[in-house]
Amino acid sequence: MNDMSREKARKLRICYLSGTVVLIALGLLSRRVKFVPAACGDALWAMMVYCCFRIVLIRKPMIISAMAALITSFAIEFSQMLTPDWLVKIRSTFLGHMLLGQGFLWSDLLAYTIGIAVIYGLTALIRQGVMKK
Image 1 (cartoon, rainbow, N blue to C red):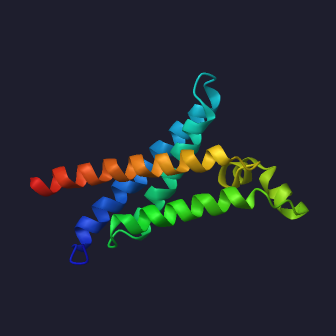
Image 2: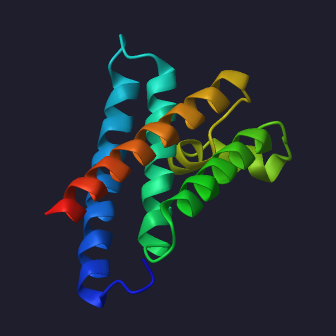
């Protein structure tokens, strides 16, 4: 994918940016709808992280973005075990809570893994369909 044209890279970045916006909206909505399990919001969050990495790493293989998103998601989840006052204050804000979460849960790691696997699979399928045309 290193021989990707600038125009194609730009279009793909726009697609991933659009995906990021949609995933943020769906994630916020998932927290408002009571019948949607919290794990869905966690999976959507990890999918959004993957899209953000794709924007930056568009010329790299998709697996690099998937691994970076998984490592980032896991690192943020494990960081929730840390409770210095300054970090607790950041997490108490809306943006801090949305980005850094609150309260470590093993189940969140599974949700992140599933979310990234799903978005990776979807983007791979879309890419195959686009490449065939």
